[in-house]
Amino acid sequence: MEILIIKLGAKGDVIRTICLATALKRKYENCKITWITKKNNRDLLTNHPDMDSVLSMEDNPTFNINFDHLYNFDIEKEASDLAIRAKAGKKYGFYVENDFAVAFNLGAEYYINTIFDDELKKNNKKTYQEMMFEAAELGYEKILPKIYLNDKDKEYAENFAKKNSVKTEKLIGIHMGSSPRWPSKIWSETKIKEFIKKAKKEGYEVLLFGGPNELERQDKLFNELKNEEINILRNDVKNTDREFASLVDLCKVMICSDSFALHVALGLQKKTIGLFFCTNPNEIESYGLLTKIVSKKLWDFFPERMDEFDEDLVNSVSADEVFNEVKKSITFDPSILLKIDEGDIVNINNISLEVLRIDSEVNVDRSTEEIKVTDAGRNMFLKDGDNNEYHIWVSQDLKEINLEKIKRKFISEPWDYEIIEEINLLNSKQ
Image (cartoon, rainbow, N blue to C red):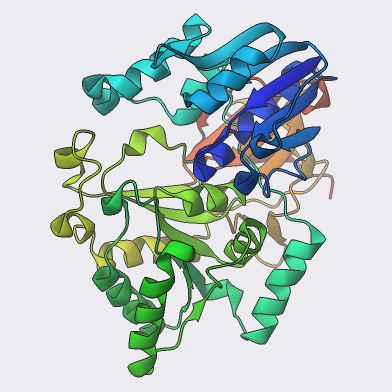
């Protein structure tokens, strides 16, 4: 099966749409996926295992095949023209007709309505990913849109860390920027500076991120702090997207607005503090990794006044509020008081399960007989007496644990959240 996905921009939207490729690979196991995007968005997609080919729109791609399915997740005319021109047995998503966005299929209509109906947009509770799954007529799965770093990326980050003697266990990343389209998306420099002073005073390292548009602001803040003998790290604003992502991966937690950096951080499975000033926080999927801090003034601006800059708005989230959430994220170390290993039998919500394996990122501390979940979103794989396989996913607040039945070849059913108060060890192999 041949599938074409069109998603040109913006960068953050491209990243959070990646999960659709994964979902389609799960549904159509042997399909071949071709993804078309803009050249400046291609960098982070090129080595994704669920994409067989990534093409740039600027190369004027032409196709000599008929696709079985085409998915266009953009409403821009450039994407629409390609979606109309390409041949496919079935088309999903959006196109433009007489300067109006139109849906190829019924499932795509809701998202279009949120764009043009302010009241619906304001009251919308669906995440962007949910709406795109609907547009694709796929049952919603909370699939993380993963970013895969290669050896070159990791080497870049390692060299940066070595050169700057970075202590990553207490490294906080702060991204200053956002799209100039919404100038009130960003946290004020005054609050960022206040936050950095608090963090440095308590022994944290800070890495200040920016892009080409933030060069002047990054220089100004960096030098102001340096003059006060407060030393922080900063990225090269001209770094590539992959270099940017590799430095985000060094951080223990990222602070950012609703921006490219937020989606990169989530794609790398980093704890993230998201600041929302003028965009709908309900549209952002958290994946158990994102803590949302929402300005009390947001609903005075969203959606009708999103494009305005307001000084009070960008100062409406305090440094203390953000720092408190950062400390919770970094020191978060919930423990399930249980001695457990592969082969053990546990009881979860009255289901007896054998532990097949524990995710390598779960640290088992035998000396204290605890499983220490030292980061958000950690995993155990189990099976019941009928050889049905299960996956336990522990979220950041510990109370929300996902018991997800896994089909053969780890193709999962839609997420089904359970509240699990305790896990009882019934029988240990030791």
